Image 1 (tube, rainbow, N blue to C red):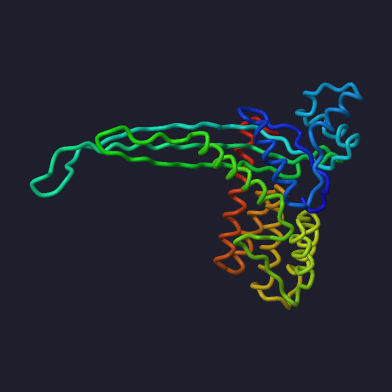
Image 2 (image 1 turned 180 degrees about the horizontal axis):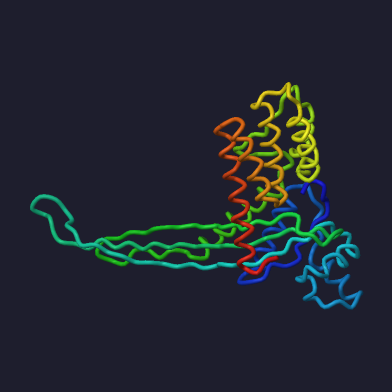
Length: 290
């Protein structure tokens, strides 16, 4: 996201989608890294252009509206799950001590809130989805009492916490300017372009990183002076970058080859990350998000 400076919420469909839109809008603004175009400005432009207000929820109009409003990327989404449920249970036991012991009943009330949203970012210059993520927020609380109803649980507060968790997960994907992952990209003095690719990756420009890592990998594979360990670093970095731009199967293949050359435990972690990315994409597809 670092190459984009102007952002707008195109629309989040589903229960409480407007509320989630507002919270994402606020979170993006508070990063100080993006200019956020508000809803009123978009609707004014749409009215002037005689576009239906509902068009802002349609990715097909993102390119046109983006040019008119100066928006580089729109964020669209679908709320797949937004619910609060509560369960009560009890067990019979004994209270007191010694001769003062007496039968009693222990009651428990458990509340659980879940918010699941599929989000995608659309580049208005191309109309292409440049990133997508399924975020899951959850929050629970439990109250207890003896021989009486346990205290009530504030379900709305739990839903607010769950929404906040989901929004934070999305922001962790789009806001950082540097990589903050439990994963490592490798560089070697004999393959200097790996360091260049890593710099692009830190800036969030994974597509350029892919190009650099690809060339580095091809060159390393043909350089007989390099060890298998050194060549594996190029394959690994290339595979991770492919995963970040949605070419999951290719990325997994590259990381697997890296592990074949050098069974480094961190390579397995990198593969697991790409597999999770792929699962997120499949979830979006199942929800009808293209």
